[in-house]
Amino acid sequence: MGLAVGVLVVALIVVFAVSERDRRGPPVPEFAPEFAEETLDGGEFHMAAQRGRWVVVNFFSTWCVQCVVEHPELVAFHDRYRGDPNIRLVSVVFRDEVEVIDRFFAEQGGDWPIVISNTGRIAIEFRVTAVPETYLVDPRGRVVSKFTGGVTLAGLEAQLARSGAAL
Image (cartoon, rainbow, N blue to C red; front, side, top):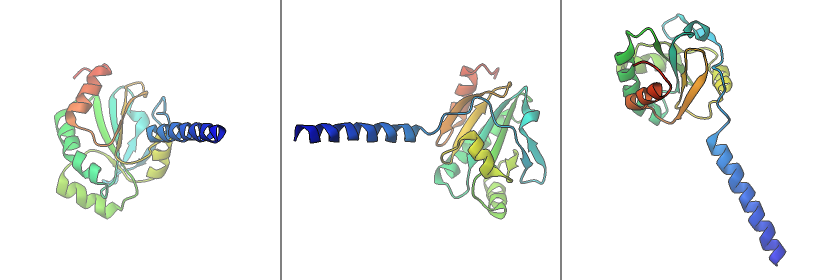
């Protein structure tokens, strides 16, 4: 009986350890993956062209409740830093339709680049586990922070400051 209890305890410890690891998700990539993909406005966003500036890469979907909740914070962030050549915001759509995305941004605001092609590949390369997820990339292309769940203007600014950005 004692052996069975011991085996059960060890099994539970392993299950909890694996579950905790899975909740944290895969490790954040050291450098932001390079991609050049089509945007909602018909242009292209080139990650490599962003070297020398801070980039906030937001993964979202219009059907994601937390994504909709965080959207006004992203609009406020973009409005505040729109004229700053050292800070850039880009969103990468995840499993959504172009017409729905277009309508969402027309109604909710926001005019930063919205990547709409090969977004599944980009999400895999960034190791996204669920939307919304947001990554802060430094001017050298290094991923310095990952936000799981919604972001706020204050949270983005605080992380930028902690990471050495001149705000």
